[in-house]
Length: 111
Image (cartoon, rainbow, N blue to C red; front, side, top):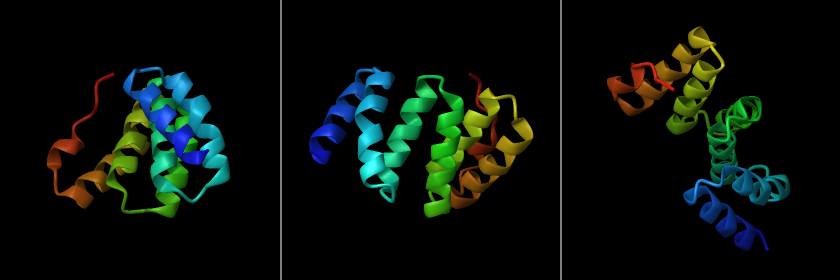
């Protein structure tokens, strides 16, 4: 059932039905809370659905479980920027840039 829900969520995400992806992913994350990849996809769906507080919460969980996951830091920076919290965002942009060696990540994301 988990694989089916995850596959359905990916399909929703690719179709830009982010709320559908959230509905499909929430039970999967509840069932397997340590699965960083699934939680990251859920956070991305929240971000794209403009549900920024849940996106932030899940991104912080991903970073807590996998501190070197550069994409979680980058997504958290973008989320914090959308929440007008640029100082906090800068920290996560710097971490993402340090983890990848890509100084382009230091540029502020425009929404």
